[in-house]
Amino acid sequence: MESQSDVPLLPTLPRPPPEKRGGGKIQFQGRLGREVWEESKKLGAVVGPAVFMNLVFSSMNLVSQSFAGHLGDLDLAAFSIANTVVDGFNFAMLLGMASATETLCGQAYGAKQYHMLGIYLQRSWLVLLAFAVLLAPVYVFSGQLLAAFGQPAELARAAGSVSVYFLPSHFMYAIHLPVMTFLQCQRKNWVPTVATAAVFAVHVAATWLLVNCLGLGVFGVAMAFNISWAVLAALLLSYALGGGCPETWSGFSTSAFVDLKEFVMLSASSGVMVCLENWYYRILIFLTAYMKSAELAVDALSICMSLTGWEMMIHMGFLEGTGVRVANELGAANAHGARFATIVSTAMSFLISLFASLLALIFHNKLAMIFSSSEAVIDAVDNISVLLALTILLNGIQPVLSGVAIGSGWQALVAYVNVGSYYFIGVPLGVLLGWRFNYGVPGIWAGMISGTTMQTLILAVITLRCDWNKEALKAGNRVRQWSSTK
Image 1 (cartoon, rainbow, N blue to C red):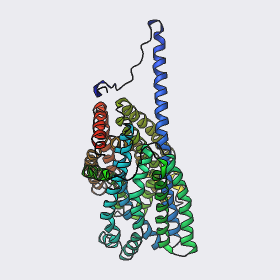
Image 2 (tube, rainbow, N blue to C red; image 1 turned 135 degrees about the vertical axis):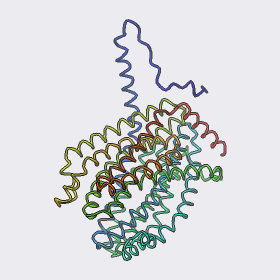
Image 3 (tube, helix red, strand yellow; image 1 turned 180 degrees about the horizontal axis):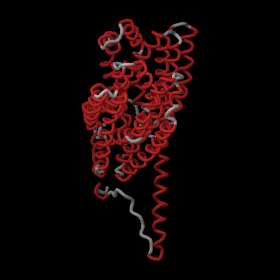
Image 4 (cartoon, rainbow, N blue to C red; image 1 turned 60 degrees about the vertical axis):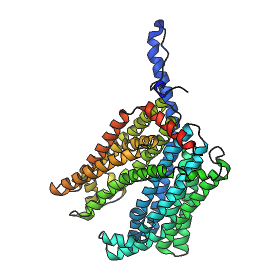
């Protein structure tokens, strides 16, 4: 096997003969174009299904909120807090921890160590289920916690009761998230895509049956959630363990209990990394609630967050696609392939965000009409549309760089970067601009955008200075070291 230092970062192109010097540039452009097209197809095979699944999961939340909203204001508020705050925090933690499986399964698949994917899957189940048990008290005592954070007593009690209903789905996350990653890393993306589409139909039917027919109220809304996630886990497990992955699943093994400490460390750093990102802009809405004219400010900000949230689904797909592609290429000791996948994914994601950002600027005074007919709300959204456009633009780069970090196994480093950028720069600067300099919501948002910008710049520098040959060597060593434990 050739040494990593011999792996070229750029393809070696044949030198054209002197009499065809004019054709050399065309030949290079033609080859580069073919490489970009091939990489785009590989990315699209992961990004497309990931975007579809993200949109379906968001739509499931909207369906549940719609049914809860027809039950009453208190039921809607209780469900929203339980689903977004309590369950959302724990889901983000487990989702982040599952990204460790993406790093390891992706690199093992690229190195053709197929048997290790099943081992990593089992290790991920052990770690995520253990953490799910540790996080369970958050659901049980959420009412007291919400009251301690200043929520009205009646709302805190109602949200606490609903949160307990979400406990079964909490454990389903720990089961289905690793399986989904396990399948994505071996390019079986169609399986979770089909399963997600089927589960959406189940979710709508179950919610309607439990709420409208059986009259179970908000309890029925939560139970429909549990049923949907259980069906998704069952479908994915039936395929993965039932013969759909003969190369990568050979049955349960005691090897899953080996090297658990290293796996826990990578999973924990992955969870912290994703949680810090997931909760950053939620803090923005939380801080806005303490401002003058808070109701109008929260309405305007919520609309902007909804718009960026839907657009962000595309870039979250690029995050997953980049993570898989970089991990596959590093595992295959293809330094050029990992670097090239990073460049193509960043360019594609940025162009999409640039287009969406321009749309936000062009229709700046009409954005809120989708959600509200209030002139005050429409004007308030119009006033912060530039910040909305800038946030969308940053969304085109930051998730891709996070995907590179996941594919390369840099989660611990990025966790430190996120703490410094988000919570030592973004939040304090937002508070300073919002209250000390009286810029209100635009000040808070501008400060927090500065944190995102700082994080993006740091990750960009790390990526640009990355020695891809060294990363490919590290990935190979990791795969060989962990595969020797089987």
